[in-house]
Image 1 (cartoon, rainbow, N blue to C red):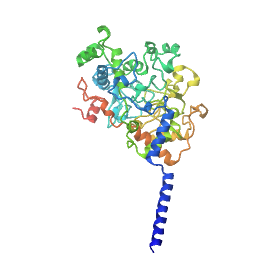
Image 2 (cartoon, one colour; image 1 turned 90 degrees about the horizontal axis):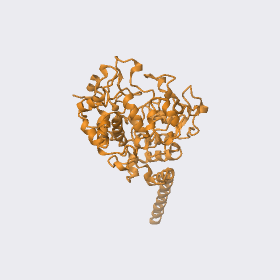
Image 3 (cartoon, helix red, strand yellow; image 1 turned 60 degrees about the horizontal axis):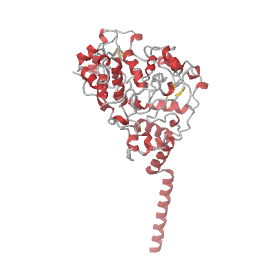
Image 4 (cartoon, rainbow, N blue to C red; image 1 turned 180 degrees about the vertical axis):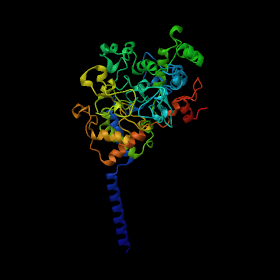
Length: 450
């Protein structure tokens, strides 16, 4: 009997070992997936190093990519942070009811991933906020075409330090992809500032503060208490040039460059915390850098790039929206800037951090959930009647993903790339003492301002 018992125990043990071995073959361990992910990321990094994808620390200013013509300083960043949120600077509104009611943050809300909380952002001419900017509506004093509402969804400001040319068509910035386009810069009022030689975010802000009706007049800066901060941030500028749209734009740009999603789980994993992501998220990351081919276009540290691709998504005018139309130049993407028909409908590859903070995707907000956006990429079929399938990017091809793989990829995009603490980039108060990011009556109620 003892022999029989020993035989039975041995058989059971061998069976368990065999079963566990088979299970291990079918379900890789977390360590296996970690190793696979590290190998994929190293193979796709420009320098072959894993830390290529590690974002800079916002407090380590020298490590942040910056424009040589706008070196980051603590004083400049702190000034820009206040200017970005202060509704007291909204003094170029079209109507009295809009004065002092909006800010840069009206359309770049931290809790919404520094994007609008609604499909189309509205600054001047908007009323209300809701919980995350989703309830902003048109002020009845304004006609639709008078609103400061853009014909393409604003791109996120998270990790924009890694972007040298900004806007969906890349029109802003004198370097990188815009080298060789100098003959185009004077053709339009919104691109002639490229001649100053700055990179994208600096150039865009120089145009943007005027387009978005923000005032940096010396008298207003004195009144609100900003003059001393301009003196500290721009002591190298002559007094006659120290206050105004140029320096205000440079301060805004300095602050924006410090908005970095470096607390996202992928970042924590890259810095050594193997438990920062679940095994499902890691499998999604392996897909992102491997089978799903996302990294073919999203390969810079911000998981964006300076490539332009036609995906055939719908434009902003094809949903209920303001101040845009079928013939809006923005609908042409890169071609709207270069005037080259071969560039038509090609849009810049955006960064992917904090995508899940606001439920609208692509330049026309045509996808309303992350699942819809991923499914659109999986199917790779044009939805825009103006853009035939033959014009779509050669990199935009159907993906053969299983349901489990689809779920893992979505989980990676939703959770692993989400910095949960973007609110740290928001000041506790601004010098005007007004409510922010909006200061109209309904917004003050929604935001609980005194």
